[in-house]
Length: 179
Image (cartoon, rainbow, N blue to C red):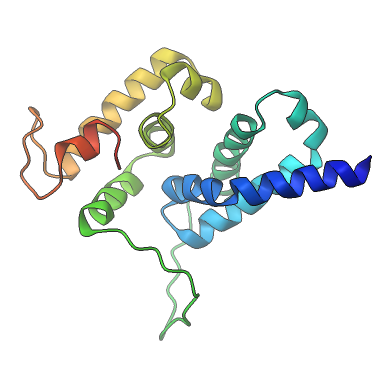
């Protein structure tokens, strides 16, 4: 019986690892931190695997763990690391066109709650109710946080109040969620 549960978890993890690292990357803005958050989330999910599978939607349960783990690990102000010299090649290449890098930088400047709302609502295309359930807040909080965050992103990415571009970013990237 335990062997079957372990194999089920291994298969679940293999299938969801890339998506959870992407989610954690959107929340943290750093690939190393994202992998740490995803790994810790999967460890917590494994420890409670019976409860996770009984919940009915293990992926939604895991997304909630990733968001909570991000808050838990980085609740305190992060210490800036200053590494001298060249870093070795990690073998992982994250390529995004410049507009995406600008948008990710603007996303990192948002507070953790607003960043989580934007990532869940527009990157993962979750409804307001699903986002509220994942974050453990009300739909009204999701709406207000999304509104404030989108206003900040528009400002940071060179869009005026009417949504006209002042830079090379497409309005649809920010407003319609194709981050």
